[in-house]
Image 1 (cartoon, one colour):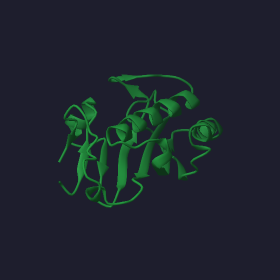
Image 2: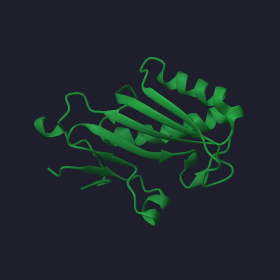
Image 3: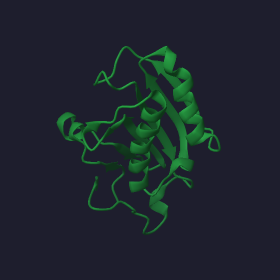
Length: 148
């Protein structure tokens, strides 16, 4: 088994910029790239709360390809474009993670890749039990989307 597993979701930017949506390390740590409210190549506009929920939904989809879920998230980073959105982004985070309580950071940035976007999130998750190579047959990636 490869030391590192990489997950792609087919997003145009992954191919254009040469990155993976998520990377799982042998120690069970999973890093999910920046996710925003871009669904199937289109910006899904909405208020900061809705965009935050959508962005975390993209991250959750990547985690699902690795057999992980929201409950496995140990850290989140939220990059927002306006201080006025802190409460709504925080409210969405609480709705999704109140029972999980990951470490979290919220950072105000000058802008994102599309001016209609007001939030981008990054997620770190941890596979309980650490080293995935010790558990036989637990390669849950599907449709050939995970690459080595």
